Image 1 (cartoon, rainbow, N blue to C red):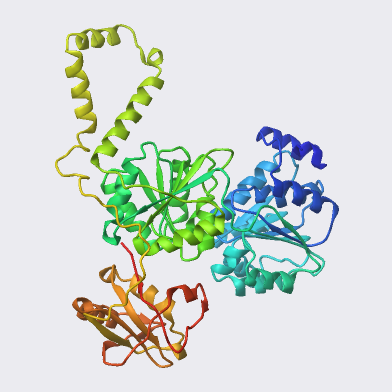
Image 2 (cartoon, rainbow, N blue to C red; image 1 turned 60 degrees about the horizontal axis):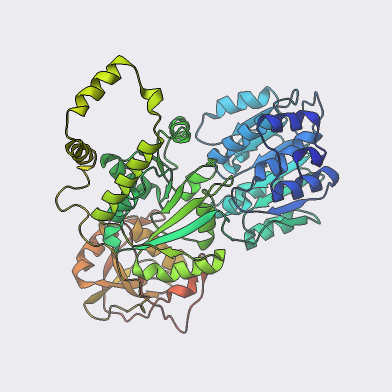
Length: 561
């Protein structure tokens, strides 16, 4: 099956030839066939990196008539990166489609510029929900006559809190529209959107939900929480030529890790929500040219990164939701290239590895953390490989090269080799560096509650104020001074929240939390003598809270560097 077999017009097949797109992916084949012959709504499920943009863009472009001036399609996506990527892709597909115009609208850029683009006229608008909703409120963007509404990465938009914006936007579109929902996962909230705004929708599903990409292998290293950054550096040193994305949980952590890596002379940059759009464009341009070898990013900022030849994805921390791991690992192993997804975990997170193995249907390979000798040997092997592949004839510049070569011949061969290696790798052989064994136990242990040497802390917020287990973890994670804090017993009450910590850290915890706020109100933390139960980790997943018995929980440790 080729694109020419899909009944697309000559203008589109010509642009696809220019892009060297020969055969459609499974989701492209199924969606294009369906959309060219049917006006029914479509729910399309396919993993990240399977070419979903072409799956909805090509049939829409195929049906836009020459000279058409009206706005015919609105495409909604979760991030500005993805918005720009979709817009650029559609412009490439429409290279020979006369008169077709595409305008991207997203936050982070002056709205006046985007308003001028819309007023000049366009057939397709690609936008993030917040900016699109804003333009509708300003009466600039009018969707009453559109024919196609596309929700791309619908699961991510809902996870990012765009439901109200989506409801408002979809309420402005005509009932006669054709709605196309593309998603990697089909959560309850996505199902709800489908039920509310789609009619008699056809469902196309390619591949199993949350199954890992075939060309991606999965590895993990086990370490103590405080050694995480040191392990990261060793892994990077052991992977000369690595070209990939390092995923962190928060903006603060992303910037912090990127700064530390740059200080340690690694080619890296941070990408997160606080980076301006102009800087994002520059960073992505350098990354695609491999002037930056490692991009440190949050899950949200990585949406829309379209690079097919990434060698590695590294998870500095596990994602909050297991499903997000599929999105992360799917950034590598594209376009028939092999990729590797690496996890940096602590012994307490080993159970998560088992969960991920079951979810994606693949075995994860345990790797020993490399030491000085391992790294030294790997780097030398990589250098020898480079020398073997080096084109000396191209480098040769006649007389000057001969003079240098003649001088080198006078030096003892072994001395020359030893000097070369010492000069090249002296930074790896410095005294004491990378000597300590950072490998932690891989034995899955039962979690123990800190009954001894622990003190209870009480916070003046409870269930009635919208406080819950997840929020206390987020609160602690947001404070650098509380990193590595171990939380033992927990009790969530209507008016307050109690949890236990190590005795040696109680004063610090009370002081830091008392200087924080929740929903604009000051937090008051103090020692408490009240009894508490246990938080059962396996019973708390995402937004779902299941309580075992009567206020019984099991301990959970935060590992944030």
